[in-house]
Image 1 (spheres, each protein chain N blue to C red):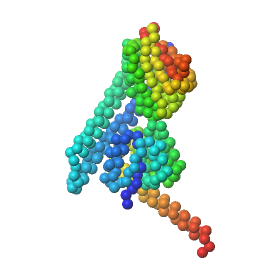
Image 2 (cartoon, each protein chain N blue to C red):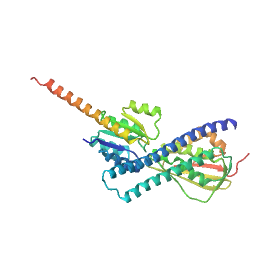
Image 3 (tube, rainbow over the protein chains, first blue to last red):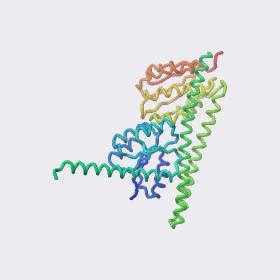
Image 4 (cartoon, one colour):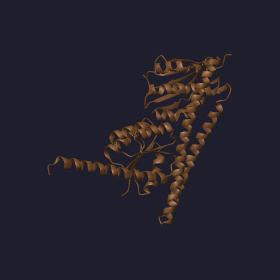
Length: 142
Length: 220
């Protein structure tokens, strides 16, 4: 099953080439050039991983991360940034980022992180389903 | 004067740090695109080995992408080099319009991050005797204060004109923008820069515009 990824970056050319490279690795990629567009997509669609640029116009990556997590706390968000200061990295992890990678990123490393994020999401969904089944079983007088 | 110089140096260091951090980020973005295009060429070569056809047009297009980003990186480095040298240039006759254009080029990315577009309006050439770095710093200081006042989705325009023995820089936001708070902050925290340049700051009577007056020739 191919991973569904949302790639967010204000550099259109970066999005085009990166999504083509991901597609050759059987990753299903959707792109957004702004955090605002990305938030609208996340409200409607489900993604296995979100790759988010830290520095973007109007709403920066950390603000976007906070808003994404507010929509769905289980979202697997990988931050991709030109310059990750330790402070920003720590802040991102505290806000629930799955990982922080520096540009230019190695596609192999990024792909591995996407696959891990996908696996983590499956575990979370399974746990959620298990909890739902337990709740149903507990509520019925069998 | 010495105290002013010290504080102007501190503000200068802060300015230098902000600009070089922004420039290095821009460079990283260009390098990331070069990296991915080179990676894509490698991916396509591997796919070609497995029998997938690869058109020469595709290769030409990818080479064009790389060339464009190399050109972009080269422009950024030229800007960085000019900026670095301006830090130790003494006061000299300087084309004010050129300083405005260069400051806008430096600040453009940071303005974009705030959703603000910067422009320079063409006008008659005006020459002033200044240290370009200090003037760039003061202009950046004014712009920073105006970003909040101007708000996202707006344009801030800079223009220079002669006014007798004075040169006038207009930094204009959209009509009706409240700029008094920005002017007060520049007067307060940017005082060492104003003093170093022997400049005066005001607000246009109609509002929405900072007016920076510089002597054409330095006194003393």
